[in-house]
Length: 321
Image (cartoon, rainbow, N blue to C red; front, side):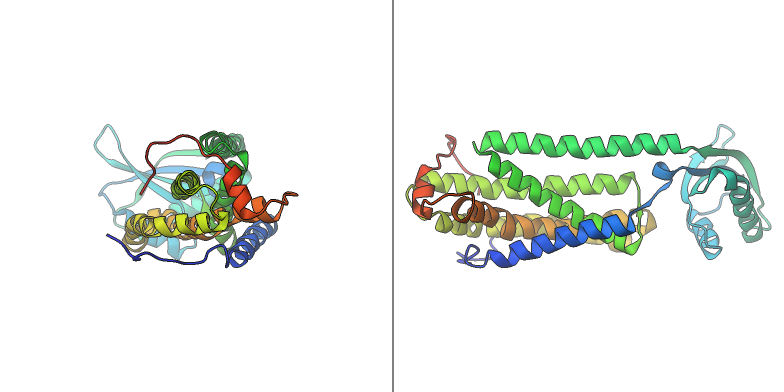
């Protein structure tokens, strides 16, 4: 199956457009994050935890609707107690000093919303900021170590650290662009969103490696050819495969965004936006940035043909389609 039959798009000739767009996304995204910051969830900030039960089970949708009308937006989980009753765990951001007022307000809303099925408070607790700081530290380390492993892997596989650094710059573009959207809209960032950002990085890097691998194969087959022509042909040869792959993932993410409900809505939004940014950067920006650096920058005076003849790819039996 092919979306494009032998495309011949001049990505190198148009390279400055995606490079400028990508730089604008990175600079604008970083500025947005620095100015507005993130709306962190209770896992990062700390807050109130209430565990309540009802004589008759109630739906989570009804709980969320009643609390939402009162301006409350807690995370809601269900738990079956040993006595068979269903307990509802409500987590909401609040200061420790305001914990009592926040819990009383939540209980008052539930009592008013279910007068014939009054709630019983089973447990009240506060998740302190120490936990939030620890989770933040672990999150930053997870992202940092993931990026370092990607640099090492790509640099080793393609025998050129520049390719690894370019791939990580692409990941930074994808992750910052998605995170900036959450910062701009004030959407809550929880561990599920962190998972989405790391997943976006993985998908994006996978597409990039496919293109890099085809460039390496063409460098071996077409030695001495113009480096820009090799990059153009490599991107065009993998274009249908990249589009089909991302559409497969994107279809699932859009369905989750529409029908997944409030719990998965932010996660699905992050995946949809991240997949768009990742596909765009893999196709239009990353490889052309390598060309821009190798041929036009870095103090090199060699022509593109001479440069492509000097680059020696790693031995490989078969490339990716």
